[in-house]
Amino acid sequence: MSVARVSIVKGRKEWKCNSCGRKIAKGEEHRSWSVGFRGATQKRCMDCPAPKTSELESSMVSTVYAAMEDADFDTAGNKEDLDAMIEDIKAAIDEVAGEYESGEMFENNYDLQERVDLLRAAEEELDNWADSLEDEPETEDDEAYEKWLDDAVTAARDAVENLDLP
Image (cartoon, rainbow, N blue to C red):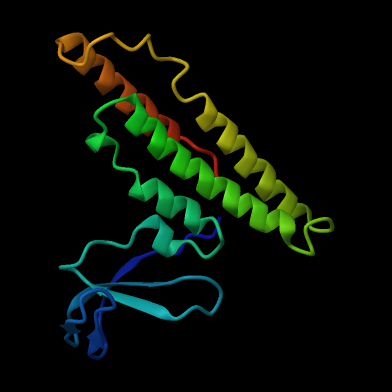
């Protein structure tokens, strides 16, 4: 994993925010980072949100991070919603692993093979995210269901946040 480090710096000249387009004056604090080897320096004013992990990652795994960031577990109204979010993340993992596997250097590059192994293991972990949950209550109208849903959201979020990605 090659996540760029974000620094908070004072500008030595005038810049333009890469997010909102606002001018960043000379001497004004802003966020600065560069993705990948010799990547273009990105600047973001302090009024804009900090960059997400998917914006800082230089490898194809950024697709997985983007899917993880898109999963808004707090909006889930039932287990099917949570399953759909988990499936979207698993699809992103599968897509990235497939891209690595289809590369012509895959057979000769142990680093790529290790990345795929980690991605496949993460995909398997997500298959079992609900194993620790009690059975879903029959009705969605009572306190027991609300407690169960809160536990399910926590389990799904924890499963995603604890993934071991390359």
